[in-house]
Length: 157
Image (tube, rainbow, N blue to C red):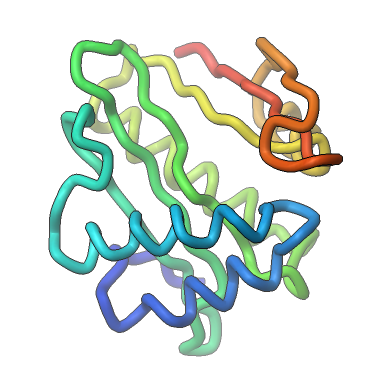
């Protein structure tokens, strides 16, 4: 397993990974938002203008991109936020997601060891994040789409 920074050549593989996780983990209407994020990364730009910095990575296995994800640090916020993290659906529960999330947490800690980490996810994956020390702070029913609830989660230092 190789984790490396995202490049524009990874775009289509990341889109296919996203699609493999619809509609259980992502609502179909979110695909456009994800593509906008990738477009900014393709042009080495900040996707969310209120961010101080953004980082995006891919995971390769057998020379294929099998996961993608990153994080961003909003300006004057004091926390990092996980962004667009996903593993190819057929490879769930094989340890890739755990190793990749731990990598991203470690990258954040290298930037600022005392920063909090936040994310939002669905009822289908929040337990995965709980196992790695994240705690649910809020639940919004049907926030992403009907039947797709939003779980806001945080991890301290």
